[in-house]
Length: 95
Image (cartoon, rainbow, N blue to C red; front, side, top):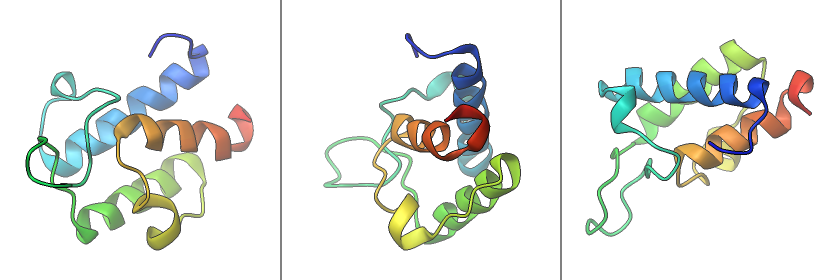
């Protein structure tokens, strides 16, 4: 999280909170490098599925006023950090 502005840090915290709520885990167990989707089974991930991605999209749209599509925007993100950077880059007050 180093190098983020205070607003960026706020976005980061909100994204972490949303992900933790969706997967019923503690925020302290998550990091920027936490994988959302299972890749090959060898690396631990949160095991996101399409319903989880939909819930994440809805929560981010509501919190940040984004217009997300599951296929293009969320399925392509491997980590929590990637989602955070996307939100920061696509939310008017942060651009």
